[in-house]
Length: 71
Image (cartoon, rainbow, N blue to C red):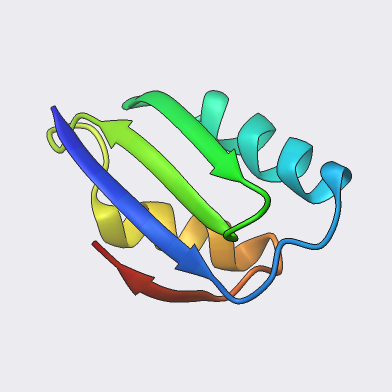
């Protein structure tokens, strides 16, 4: 299992959190995810055999949220 934290440009409202979390929960290979409103960060635990970090970043970007960095 791999853990990553993605810093987003801005998460401005509770519906943004729901949109991101909803997409992540439906994504194959992602075991856990948490969107932190106050810091605009997304924490994800995933199986690299099923999905890559690049795939996750692309999915977040497609929702309209820019991923600034990854840890």
